[in-house]
Length: 314
Image 1 (cartoon, rainbow, N blue to C red):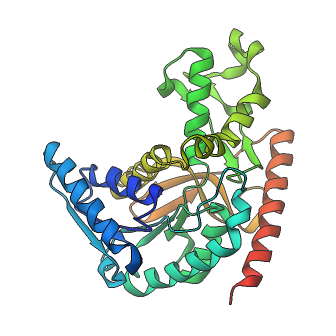
Image 2: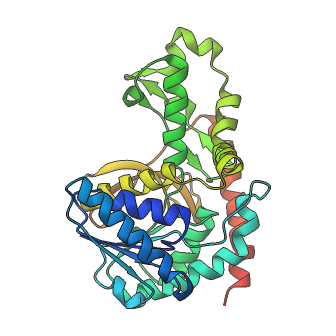
Image 3: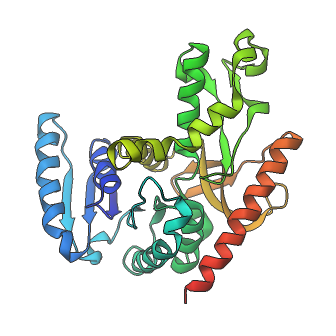
C-alpha cells in the first residue's frame, strides 16, 4: 500500500513518515513538501532508508515536491500547517491553516481521487471539515486524528494511577480536540469493571486528569518545541487499522449528520468503526447528563468557529 505525507519536512510529518515506513503493510511512503523544502525531505529520505536497512525493512521512500507523485495513494496524511508556539491555542492557527488544508485537499482530489484523507493539522476538527468540503470526497474518506491521541494519553494516565497495564484500560475522550474535550467517565472500565467500582477511584482526580490531557500538547511544545512521537504513532496506528481492514473502533474526527444526539454539520471526535474504505460506521454513544451537556457545548463551540473559518475561504 502507498501512503503519502503532505508536510513531510515538519516535525510531525517526518516523524509520521518514519513511523509509517516501519509498518510492514506500507510498501511506499511519499514525502511531499514545497519546493523550498525539497532538499530537507531528500535528506530525511536518505536517513530513513539507512534506518530501514538496519531493521531489514524493505520499503520505498520517495521525497518529492511534485504532487502528481501521490497518485494511487491509499491514504494521504495532511500534516502541513503553521506550527503553534507554547502561548498559542489551536484556534490561533485556524485561519492560515484552513487555507493550506483547503489547497492540499483539492490537490489530493485531483491526483489521488480514490484515496482516504487523514487530517492532522490543527485545529483538527475544523481542518477536517475544510478538507471534507474542499476535496468533495464522501465523508467516510475524510478523517481527522481527533481524540485518538487524547484517548491514548488518557489511558496512560489512568493506567499509572491504578497501577494496571494500559491494555486493560478502556476509555475514550470525544468532542473537540481542544479545550472542550469530553471524558466518557460513565463508560470507562478497567478489565471490564467500571472504574468507579475500584477502591483507588476515591483518590482519582478527574478534573486534574482531563486538564493534563488537554494541556499535554502544550506542555511538550513548551519543553521541546513540538509534539512528534505521540502523534506519529497515533497516525501509523490509524493508517495500519485502515490498510489491514481491522474493523477497530477508534475515536477520530468525522463529519456528523445527526448520528450522535442529533448533532450535525460539524466534524467532531467520536467512536468510529474503521476499515479499508475509511469510516464504516459512527458508533452511537450513551452519555451521562453532564457528558451530554459538555458534548453539546463542544459541538456548538466548534461549529461556531468552523462557520467563521469557512467564511474566510472561497
